Image 1 (cartoon, rainbow, N blue to C red):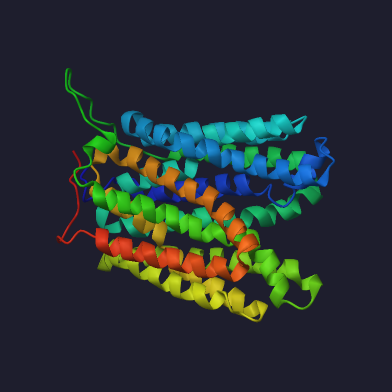
Image 2: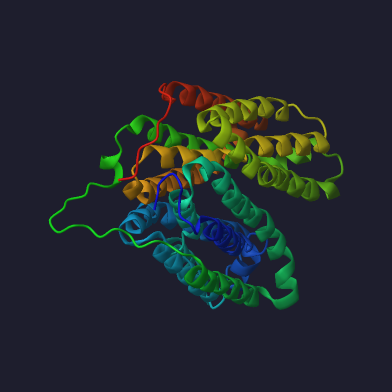
Length: 406
């Protein structure tokens, strides 16, 4: 397979991976609206404990996913990226169905931990698409894949809010498992991957972090991915409380808060592939630095809005500016690591993003509670500006940073 031309199957693989990422992310997020209700059905009656166990159950998946992402990436480099997607889709189908069979909250948390351990379809898709797509189309293809991931994040809670009322909570999990089983079949029979070159006897092949010749751009992308997710998630814990201060009608607070949360995701869905195409044309670093600066600027007026529609509009514009960042991050990594190490380094990138997802809400909640909600927006703005400055400093000054596949 020519590194520049990519795989002849790259387009079909891209659409299958986008569909699979959408379905698995929907399955992971659809329980958000009814998770406290399910925890209560499993025998937890105290309101404080319901909230506590709901947080533990939801966050446990990201914990094991962050710990195992580099391992799955390394195994993908060694044994094939398609095989890892088959493993992830089969494991997720089983785990989601088992959640519907939980008899107590301890089983629920254990199975959610298992789901994070066995899952990783979207990050595995990122690795496969990045490695098989022509380098000149990488950012666009990863933008399309990101559209599927973000659409899943948007659709999951909406489906989870409606489906349990129609078929019940346990049947909702069984339905999610069935949909992921369809992804398993599509992955198994439709994705094509060329045979990996066999390693010669006695040949020692260095892979992973040690194989990266210039680690500065890769480190910059790991930090950028973590900061992006931290900035996105730092606002989440205070959105509803913040909306209460600018929406006079209490009956409209939850509706406006939901629209605010969805606005950024919608903006990202719209812009992801377009920013990816722009990055393929003018350079990934330029788009990353520019998007971080625009997002930093948009966060400042969010701290001083006086009406719900203003916050919705600004969050939508922020989503537009951030939609292409993760595809560009993956593209820069793809251009700066050898082919044999793409999976393991992208696995590290996934872990760094999970770190941002975990620390962002903790920092946002702490700052919002002890300093003030406006400080969360302004602090996040400073964080994004620092990320842009770091990207500008770390940006290689030579014309190209591509590392030829070995």
